[in-house]
Amino acid sequence: MSVTAAKSRIVCTIDFDRNGRQAGYARAPLSRNNSGWGTVEIPIVVVKNGSGPTVLLTGGVHGDEYEGPIAISRLARSLKPEEVQGRVIMMPAVNIPAIMADTRLSPIDGWDINRCFPGNPKGTFSQMLAHFLDSVILPMADISVDMHTAGHSFDSALSTNMHHVADPAIRERTIAAAAAFGAPYNVVFGGVDEDSTFTSCVERRGIVSLGTELGGWGRVNIEGVRIGRRGVDNILKHMGVIEGEPETGQRDGSPKTRHMMVRDPQSYVFSPRGGLFEPTHYVGEEVRAGAVAGYLHFIEDVDSEPLMLTYQKDGIVWFGAGPGRVARGDAVAIIMEDYADDWSGH
Ligand SMILES: [Zn+2]
Image (cartoon, rainbow, N blue to C red; front, side):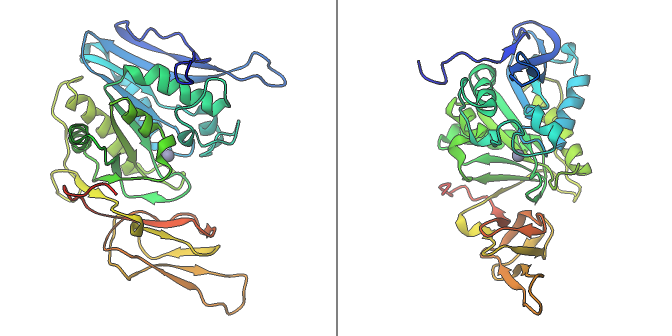
């Protein structure tokens, strides 16, 4: 038996085939010193009516990213079965132990759950949870929207994102879904360490996969929540699950999402040393190759000149202005540029 075919240890009493609204928990076993039969309860709300596509909405895969959990839980409390044609599976707080601890990594095993897919039912807590998502939840979905922000690592320009999927038909469907979501930007990218991410699992199953980056710094971005809440409604409209046309107008007067890409490794600015990083641009600002991305200060050394870091590309800052203290090798900015149809994805 392969790992992904093995039975999940997580118990979910929701009947995903039943019409109506069900709100409950997936119970993940977690044996502790003072509770040998203890469980971690992961919230799930399912709204189903008749036949139609299944939309999967996940938030809180990383525990310090709050806009998605807020947007999805608002929808989960208000969506009525009679408004729905098809099924909506909402998991606003996937990594609930991390959310309660305000951390990206699991406080139980130290893993980034979004780096351990497709997981393992007999592995650590994060691996068990990843396996549950991949083997139990994902096979039901026609489209997955996994809502992230930049956490404590960065701020992010408000955006959806997607891989440059090899299959052109799925790529087109994903771009169409992103356009319907209606964030200011949609970013197509190759990614880092991507084989082990949730997105890669979704794609391996031939399901449309959309991510979001709706803020960062571990705070709640007001506009990020607004875009996220509108976006999940827009996806339901786009999929024909609820009635209506997606609303994609932008605050700057533009009628729709601007499609972007992270073209190559030169799009990243890395810190060559540890230090105190002073960024020069906000996310969403236009920058030029050679312009100053920021200054690395060495406050501990009297009279030490700061080190100047520069961009290698023209474009717009997608990720930037992270924490003040950075380590050698940390990314301090990521540049996006307008999407080109002829881009190969690498
Ligand atoms: Zn994240």
